[in-house]
Each structure stands twice: as C-alpha cells, then as structure tokens.
Length: 204
Image (tube, rainbow, N blue to C red; front, side, top):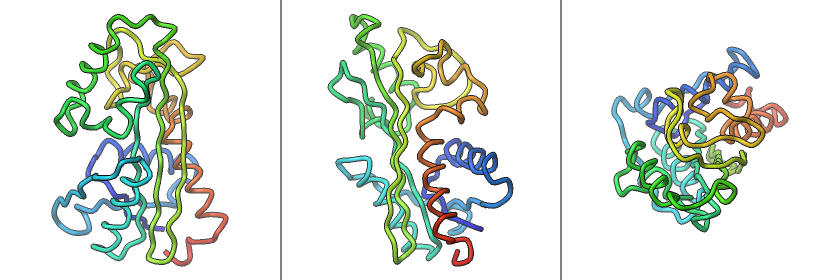
C-alpha cells in the first residue's frame, strides 16, 4: 500500500515510516510530495488549531497528487505558558523550523518556573483525505520540560521533554524506545488501525 505523507520534513517522514514498519513490516510505503511532484511545495499552515493545519496539508497535497494523503500537526502544550507554543510550535521563535531557537525561547520563558509546574504534553493530530473521506486521529504524551537540553537524537523539542515515568528526554532515547511512547506513534497507530479495519488497502 502506498500513501502520501503530507510533509517535507524528512525526520518526521522517517520516524513515521519506522512506526509503521514496526507494526506492519513492509505493508505501507510512504511517498513524500517532493518524490511525487519532483519539487518541494510547502502548504502554508494558516490554521488556528492542530486539526485545521493537518487538514490543510492533507487536502492540498491530495488535490495536487490525487494520492490518498495523511498529514499531521504536532504541538507542545506547556501548562505554565497557558498551552503555548501549541499550534505555533514549529515557528515559536518567529522562524519556521528553527528548532534550536524554539527550544531556547521555551527555556528562557520557563527560567524561573519550578520543576513541579513545568508540566507539558505533546499532542499530534493526523488528518486523512482521499477525496471521499476526511478523518482525524490523535495521540498524546504527557511529561515535563527540563531546565536544559539533553541528548542528541530526535528533533524539535525532544531534548527538553521528559515523558512521565521516565528520566530520559526523548532525545536521549533510541528511536525504538521513543516510538513506543510518543504522541506521534499513538496517532499513527490509531490511523493504521482505521486503515486495517476499513480494508482500505485494496482501494489505495
């Protein structure tokens, strides 16, 4: 089964492919818009929620390629910051995709916040569009923001986020361990269960 993944983020595409392969090895092959269209085309994320941004990407890339497409939007929601950066997570510093600057801004804002009040969660929402159906799938991972960056793996805010009941950041975990726990993994597996239950393999 081939599916279009509505992102130009190679880290995200690789992580999702790993999640799918662990659950159903070799069953799902992800294609990126750049592979299909021969060039990188970004869809502007103008939505006010994760759901809106995920839908914008899934629907636009489906329109361009006519390949069933799923896209996700992920936000880090920090309680001490009233849910920020949330839908602004990828551009919290003002520059889209500048992970280091985004992390620094979060750490600076939380500088005087005690550990017990640094609770946060990652939330991923997937939207799937195939020209007939539009579906949504969600995954969450609760945890906290630490005082400094730790670890070399992962991307985004992984080096400052420690999931509940663990001492390592996502960036200190190997990819297999992170994928067992992550918000994105939970959302992807919910999506995969939908595909299997609805027997969409034959139609894609």
